[in-house]
Image (cartoon, rainbow, N blue to C red; front, side, top):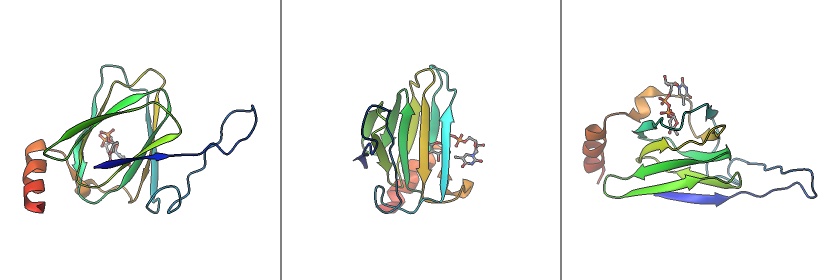
Length: 134
Ligand code: T46
């Protein structure tokens, strides 16, 4: 359903960390788009959709956030709270993001340009699509 990718701090010494991410080396796809999400209130819940083809890597570079993933049969909750841990999400998973801490910033690397047609934003449509897939 997902993988946690460990990222490496390449900055030796006591001057903070530096974490490079290289396409097809650290993550398993070519990066076509980068975006980040921040300023989310503690009560807000985002997402509520799945992607047909898009692969993504999510990194909470500041603070923490919970990610619910649902493949139509099973649900998992992953807490992202470490800038050295990246969550790789394959296509075909319903996702919701919640419990953003104040100041948290969620960085997302995506395998495709933005395409609203790749989204399934209705949960019943998602379940129907998953049945058609299997
Ligand atoms: C995802 C989760 C983790 C754009 O115009 N370009 C973009 O690249 C993106 C990502 C969004 N938008 C527009 C579409 C909406 O009008 O920004 C608005 C907010 O997007 P959305 O409601 O889809 O945001 P989230 O936080 O629910 O979901 C986002 C990504 O859209 C989605 O792919 O997996 O983050």
